[in-house]
Image (tube, rainbow, N blue to C red):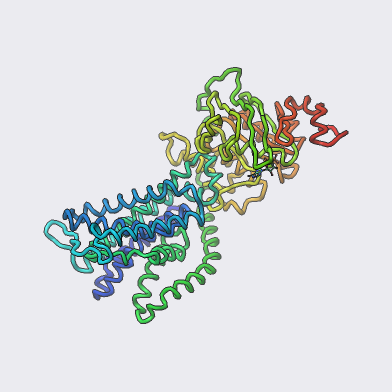
Length: 591
Ligand code: ADP
Ligand code: MG
């Protein structure tokens, strides 16, 4: 009931706000104020667009205003040259801006952080300079005049109030789309990528594609806003699209709390309306920005966490209602196993990897049979994690081949990208847990269920599977907790649940027992045996704890300085002289 009340309350509140916005021009009854509101509406749309790029997907874009310019000039050119209707130009401006977004994104999204920021800054300037200097098309710095206003049949939209209602409709639509995106799988993928790109990619998320979507959707919003702006003003010139404008929109998003939709809207309103009302202080606009930025950042950093905890707590009440939980084993068993020769599902042949002069892996060979637990052991720096990284597509092996279910995943022509390897059914955990910290415990697992190509499976079915998986690793009660609130051991279990959420055929675990106490290790061992037995998942385990290794492994590979020095059953390894010398020091026996 409580959950229902909350959404109802939210709904009512939204309706009240919209109602107020509808009557606002009449309350103000002042053309100038309405004009300012229209302007702030444009910034709201841009801020929501940039919020998707920077806030959701974590891509620092310093040239965002270029997309606004593309929209504005699309409107200006098509309207003055061909007299195309505004109603056609509005989506066209958005689409062209989105295409520019993809053109920019495609070559640049592989660079990150400050490099991406620099490239986008350059892109923004290039667009502005092209507009400024392509006189024959854009009329240069003088700009384009005589852009027609929108009209509906014979009715021309001319007064500020008309434009106010138009931008209100666009603004509400943009807010709605943003909200839906934030709740959609795509929205969660963006947050996952922002939190930890590598962990996202080994779950099967095509990170480059998702980032392109963010760029394209963000650019679309700006294009629409730009088109509206051109038609509203009846005039465009390059002066409206300077670097400073990009920074202002970025400030709005940062002030709004990066990723917060309501925050972006409110800060857009404040940052546009306030300086207009305090005209005599125009000069201090940037100073005002800077100061408020500083204060709000300090204030927000505390508030945001509180707000999140609150929302998790509220959702926690919801989970009590979930009594109907289907059986995870059934879900796992529905997949069809393809038969392979001699039951060998993984063939590793002569894998080598160098880091500069260091041979992290050299000529490593072994085979893994279906449903076995194979352990990789060896001293620190032996190359165990590097092997997992090569196998999951994070690092490129220099040489060698790996076949999975007789399909080449690593070969002479490089490796499949991480997300494709994941989709084939290889899933992994990390030596240092890599969870998505901005997502709840449940959402961490949900992400994986979204990726399964099962179109028939409904959203709530996915949630059921995710809850069931959490239950399986003993974390159901923590479903709506923040990841950082979990104990270290629980974080490790959660990472295993997340790795299972994509229904892998092969699970790679990098030192899962590391940092666990004896009791937790016992639980872990039983869990691994159960995963193999009931969920039919083959496991490769990197582990230091010999008790764990000897107890649950079928075979063991011993690495030392990147070379395979032994392979065999636990008993064989225990009695292997080479292993005793290299791994445990002379005279000691592996126990
Ligand atoms: P293990 O997991 O067995 O402890 P790793 O695979 O992490 O060992 O490392 C093997 C060797 O490769 C170590 O000497 C390590 O310092 C080196 N190494 C690992 N990753 C990198 C990297 N990205 N760049 C340079 N050297 C690396
Ligand atoms: Mg390691």
